[in-house]
Amino acid sequence: MPFDGTTISSVVHELSVLVGGRIDKITQPEPDEIFLSVRSKGANYKVMLTANSNAPRFGFTKQSKNSPLTAPMFCMVLRKHISSGRILAITQPNFERIVEFRIEAMDEMGDRSEKILIIEMMGKHSNIMLITPEKKILDAIKHVPPSVSTVRHVLPGTEYVPPPSQGKFNPLETSKSREKFFEILAELPLSKALYQKHIGISPILATEILSRAEIHPESSTLSEAEKSRLYEAFCNVFSKIVNNSFDCSIYYNEAGIATDLAALPFSVYAHYKSEAFESPSEMLEEFYKRRDESYRISQKTADMRKLIATHQERCRKKSFMYERTQNEIQNRDELRIKGELLTAYLYMVEKGAKSFTAENFYDNNELVEIPLDPQLTPSENAQKYFKKYNKQKRTHVALQEQITKNNDDLLYLESVASAMETVVDEADIAEIRAELAEQNFVKKRGAQKSKKMAKAAQPLKYTTSDGFIIFIGKNNTQNDYLTLKMAKANDIWFHTKDIAGSHVILVTNGKEPSETAILEAANHAAYNSRARDGSQVPVDYVAKKHVRKPAGAKPGFVIYDYHKTVYITPKNP
Image (tube, rainbow, N blue to C red; front, side, top):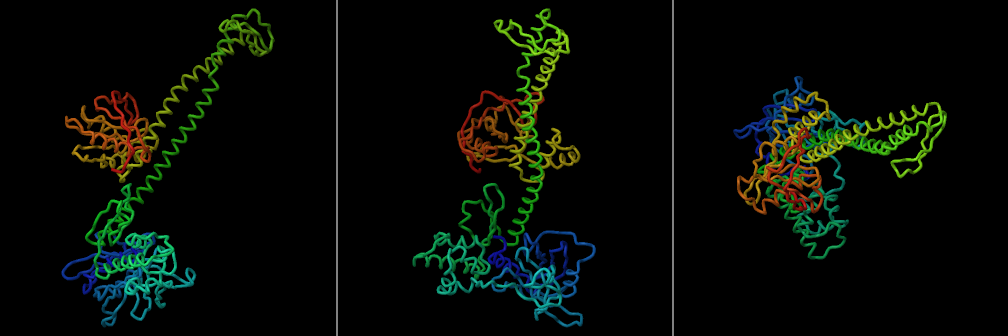
């Protein structure tokens, strides 16, 4: 729930240390982003305000960005009116997704003058504005003329009008009156009523409140006991906000992706992994950093996935074509037999005949009719059959090589597609791209750069519950390294049976691995494979000394024997 009322309230409380401080520097590194450097109580702080439609926010930041050589107009207006100004107050009016910085600075006449810097965090309507106490807009980072909106204009010289409240109520006020609270919630279902009738409550916070009250979100009637639990849960949440008692965390889903953040503990995310932060600004910085990384990686992997899928489709089309050709030439021996029969009975074949019936001494002297070209002599007809047979024979030999190569390519591409599921950062992408370039599936232009970046990529490393180390290859290059170079002879090698996936190495250091370690390593192998969502996935395991790579085999391909098999229903490690 990035930036609902509770998160904003936590950041406003954190930024209260700036009250009384002075603004030393103002920059605008991005078209929708402002950085303020503030000196307060003997310390320096950097504050970021961004009206980015995908991630509007504000708070302390450690980021450093280069500013344009020529400052944008809005930045110049801010420098003119609030540079060296003293921050009087930072507030969140009416629990809205709006924050106001009241700033006192000297005007052009040398008199003290108050200005209000406002950031509105409302998705695509987000904006940053500088206004006077009389509500006159001095400028905005985004201008909204009448041609864009007939409801609310945002232009220099016009009156500042707050966004329409849509008839919502301030939850900090309704939490003071049980009667008012249930009057507001007269419209059901409850989950929608909670966030549609209150300012600053997100859908997930509404779900959390109902979860704490042990009430189903779609409930249509409430008992007195349920009403008491619901009102108590609601009041508990907002009493923490009133008392500035925040508990900031990021929540990660099973794939390790940062899914949500909250300034309060969320029981609805109890099954997710969480990461706690001491400050809401640190939480926000880390969340958006991870989200941006995930977005950037998803964009880059999207191109790679499309490329791999394209090559896979080509291979499948080749398989279909090869199969059709195989069917067409499967009776090639009949051509040879007809040629030999014609040669044997050459003296009996009449010149200009359209066919000849002969006893097939290869098939119990069964009669076989042999079509002839009347324009050719009997000998030329026989040679025509031999020539066609030899051509199909050569096609068959070449076809076997092409089928083998095509099947190898399909298996390899399937393993690369599996590796794409374990991509964590850009170094992983670079390593896979370099590998594909080596196998001539992508152009080698830029492959050298990918190789250099790929050096930073490292296999995954885990420790079993009883202390054994496990390494997991994230792509075929790492699989080969782990299996063929790093693993010792008595380390245990794991891989899903006949299913594309990672090579997993259980480091034994000469010890006998426990059953627990075997099962946990097998789970890693199943989870890091194309069968992640399956059940009873077969995983082969064997001492590394029984694993070898055939000469000329593609990256990641090995053969093995003396193995055992365990069946695993994969779970997120």
